[in-house]
Length: 567
Image (cartoon, rainbow, N blue to C red):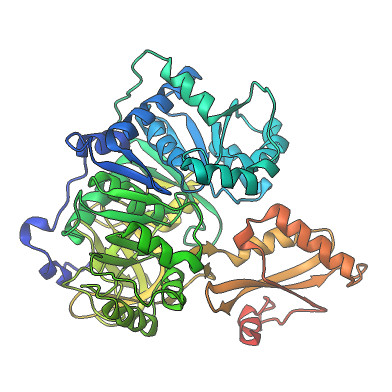
């Protein structure tokens, strides 16, 4: 790690009372923290899933059953358990059960391609997998190449009310191929029963410094990375959020739309509401056209989302009579919310009687989610906020790494207790991103450009790296190009982001075929099928453009800027 100095000017501190400028990292595991925070709230509702409500008492009981079943199947402290599921009660229960026994949760997108699931399981050395039933065929085909010795299958209908459960079965589950009796596969209900009959205590004490979660992102370089977070990394964010969102408490309910495999979704939209005793309204699949029905039915008091979600809020035709007077916070993260959309959302909120405007945050998986937040005092139009308590930020020249003047654009660096442990099995990449100053403080190079104004508010400008953000998900062109270029028909490719009315951006692929391959309908269909097998659904290019060659820069690199201008 390199060393550099840092200015001691922190003008953002004026927005915090002196006793709230620092947050102590809690001791223990994620589960121990959750349990301690809710010991007097057992009668309150923890989860609302399509109208089926679960109290904190029952929630902790289900976590215990799941943890005991894991233990009975040989899961030990330090083992990695993969969770490849949408936002269902079973997924949340499994996540906390993993923490309860001191294991490490590896979070995977449930719509990941077969090869992506395999790679994640192999790279993390996972020994158990929780996944949804529609992934059975994918898992079956990769099982022999992994160290998995138990796969637990569940369905989104497992915790639904009876009427919805029947409807989901008729519409979806009856079409899903499932295993018969098999030693490796087990259904959630049977797995749960196994835990009920296990009589030994399974709670395992863990340190705040122990690894707890593996999340997946592109890193600051744009190359896919597995990011290792500790118990303390995640738990400290809750204390920071309590100060940033002081009005929230156990009377609140949060709309849980953002997915568990996304850091913002897992930390701020699952662990945070459950740690303050609020009710988490789980939504496994978000449908923009039904946004109004979600608000009418559940009346959430906290609505977190990515910019595309708020675009859905604005474009929904059935919002005229929605009353948002009970909403305490509307929080945007996952991508920057431009000023024009910010103003439109605020106008909408005001027209629907919401007492506050939208607040933004900034963060990344490497900082355990949000590390910058625009609280009510510092909420400046165009700004993503100020550092959360105990966090620092600085702006440096990307080339010299020297700190720039106030108001000058440079690379954003972040320091604080939520900074990751590192990239899994990649010390070189970790050392490229994390740097230590002379006091021993660790800083993350975000790969993003921005500036700090005189009041200490951060303004995001653009990304240093090539990055496409589609509906809040990071898509890395270099990764898509790597996958495309492995196809036997393709000589080279270039992927760029193009505007999309709802998703903000989607990937577009420019492809040059090998000289002996003809550009035919069959060729194009085979390439598209290949992408469907090797890329997650949200990563598949929306357009394929076939060219005889690609534009080049003066030094012979593919000029993706020229292709971006063609969009």
